[in-house]
Length: 363
View 1 (cartoon, helix red, strand yellow):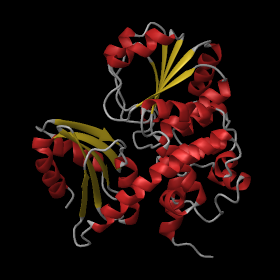
View 2 (cartoon, rainbow, N blue to C red):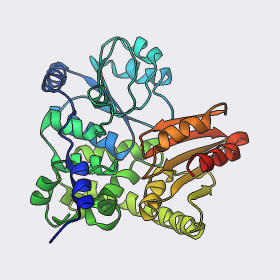
View 3 (cartoon, rainbow, N blue to C red):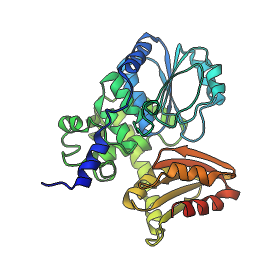
View 4 (cartoon, helix red, strand yellow):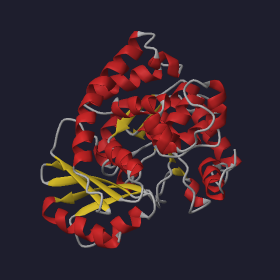
């Protein structure tokens, strides 16, 4: 089989993650700190990457407690209650885009902060971010967790692909789990939406939705899952619960996806899909799936909630994060994220203005 130059270049762009991850000394330092801690508290983003980063570290070091933090907004002093309740000797922050110095100042113990979002300037924290070494790098947090532990390969694959990145250890996963992913596929979009592995990733994502009590239970059950086959084959009660939650939420999601597809104007370069507030937010996953299906378009999925709209934005060709920053200038809202995928919150009175600005900036 002969591959085009473009296909070969894409393959190596997707898989070459060994460059500018973390230095050996940084990885060793993180290991030593986690080894030494008796009661670490993990505060992690509740998306697939953040959850898998936590699970990898928790399973390997076998100690500590994890608290999932909703993706929207900053990690600030309202989360101090967890510090007072758990009395940790180490706080580990994973995959959170914004952490406020005010929270850091209230934490009386050592702090590890492992992340891959735009660099933050914080005091009193040991901060690890691949962007410090290479401003163009895009390394999921679950990738770094795997490099720290060399453990739980399947969780690292789930986390990286959720963040739309095919890691350099994808081929090793294919050797261990050939029935979940054949050797020819490396494109993260294809894997997410066309394979059995993609369904597993979706199960992780959807089990992080709903009531806090349900999410907490799902995370606790995932801590006891040792193999993807336990979930796929529903070999125990833990897996049955995770599958049941996924199937219920997936029915809601598929109805929403159908509505979104019916709203698309093929001549319009921007897809805007709005839906009213509901118990469950599918904004992030829906934006990713629509973007995969329409790779030459800007995708905006907006969920109405009280006096705001919560947005997920995608553009596989342009830097949508920079576009969003310009569009938000002077408006009552905030947002940010990655080059091709980001989120925002905007006051209802400024929503239409924001959408119009993004349309102009993405022409």
